[in-house]
Image (cartoon, rainbow, N blue to C red; front, side):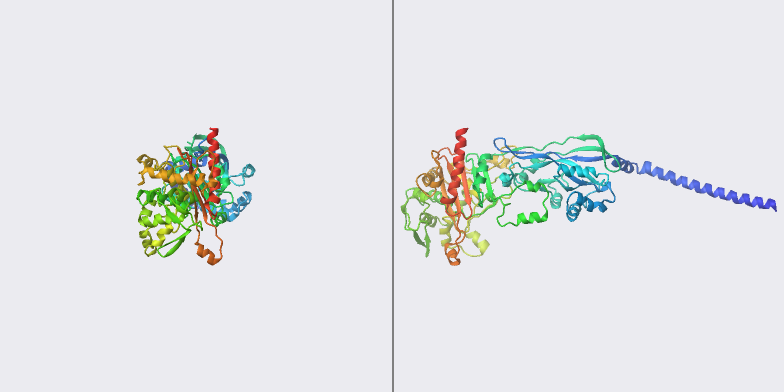
Amino acid sequence: MGKEKIYEDFTFLHRRVRSSLYLLAISFIFLVIGYWKVQILDHRHYWSLAEANRLREVTIPAPRGCFYDRNGLVLADNIASYKACLIRENNPDWKKSLAKIAELLQLEETVLQSRIEKYANQPYFFPVVIKDNLSLEEVAQVEARRLEFPELSIEREPRRFYPFGSLTAHVVGYLQEISSAELNSGQFKGKVMGDLIGKTGLEKTYESWLTGEDGKKLEIVDSLGRSHGEYGRVEPKPGHDLHLALDFDLQAKAQSLLEGREGAIVALAPHTGEVLAMVSSPTFDPNKFVSRFSSKEWEELFSRPDHPLENRAIRGLYPPGSVFKLTVALAGLQKRIISPETTFFCPGEAEFYGRVFACWQRGGHGWVNLPEAIKNSCNIYFYNVGRRLGIEDLADFGRDLGFGAKTGIDLPGEKEGLVPDPKWKKETQGTEWFAGETISVSIGQGPIQVTPLQVAAHTALVANRGQRIRPHLVLDKMARVNREAEEMGLTEPKVEANYFEKVIEGMWRSVNDSGTGHLALVEDFDVCGKTGSTQVISREKAEKLGLVIKPHSWFTGFAPRNNPSIVVTVVVEFGGLGGASAAPLAREMFALYKEKLNHD
């Protein structure tokens, strides 16, 4: 009995040992398989995870190219700046910290969340920019609480800075964060969410030229994301600079002249097309766009009734008024409808096609020839020329001399304007052209629309006695976006060169012989110019509604008469008569330019 008991116990123990050995063997096999899978099959995957825990790749932003005026003055620069980033990978519980992070950075939690949502499709190791342009005090506060918020990171970057604020806002433009739509368009290779790109002006036109190549650095970090030195780096390559034709003094003068007014001033070098000044008023401070706008701030700026974001110089559309009389005069001369000596009698009003049309001079100008008609801006004279030409020739010469098409300036968003004709009216309004409309177009009224830059380019063509120019802001030829078109050259206008001299005589007399442009007179500078006033609504409608609405005010001209070196075009919205409002502003521009010539 005892032996049987011992045998049974031994057998039971043997079975237990054998079972344990089987289990141990099976476990060992699984361990071997797992080790093989980690070390052999998934070696690269787990090695990458280990490296990511030890090394962090950080982008070193490349400085953007700077802008300079024609004399080397910096118009757009880069300054050192700091931004706070959220790296979600560094803290699995980062969502629980959002309220405290918002408080630390003085952000509304909803704003913080909306910024993070933009990066929803980005990997968790990607830095989410939650606040930029940090003060040194804010940087210190974040660094002091890094243990509490391992997901927070402070990064240094070059920040765009416009030292003169609003002075060149419409020309240079501004930067703003790239949108999802722009990222998906394929036009911005290498850009990622959070990057700033040129949204308007030259910043947009020359985005690829101004953008450099970002560098990289590998930082040694611990499990909390804290940096413990560099493993290696590739230095960034800065973007290319741009030198502009703008003259700072002329630009500043133009802005000061338009202070408190709505309008635009353009100054050109007539022989080259270089833009010496371009100001649109009201304006804005582009530095505000570098820091991220809230939707409320953007809406307030965008919805302002005076449209400060609009560059009126290239996008403002106005009837040209009497400055269009230069085009009508050249068309009449070229078609041999008139000669410089042709006279018409101005009694103050005249009937055309059963309707009475008035001259601005209610008592009339009497008998006037072409130079006198330009000098005194006589409506009756140009009504007669327009009637003889007809709308088809008026429209044809209007387009040939630079209206109804973009000038080709290196700025985005330029508008074409409109030179109306019967075909246009039929297609857009479904009605026939009335002969009386031709009379209105003859003095730049009616549906005709031009930009201030078009008027300036047209004036340069007159100053050059028929030589066209393409306005441009950038002096660096290799950078210019229109380089290929420039190399092809420009077509000659239909008007013979000698006819321009006849028109210029009238422009000179307008300023220097007590004409409508006499307030643009600058002693010993031979300014030649033409005034203009354009009705916002008809005189009859204004009287019927009991309104007193001043017309838009124009002046365009060049100096000196022989070998001209500057064109100035001014438009003042609701400024009144061109000779009284726009001409004095042009005089200030001419006077400053003359003074600068004397000092050079």
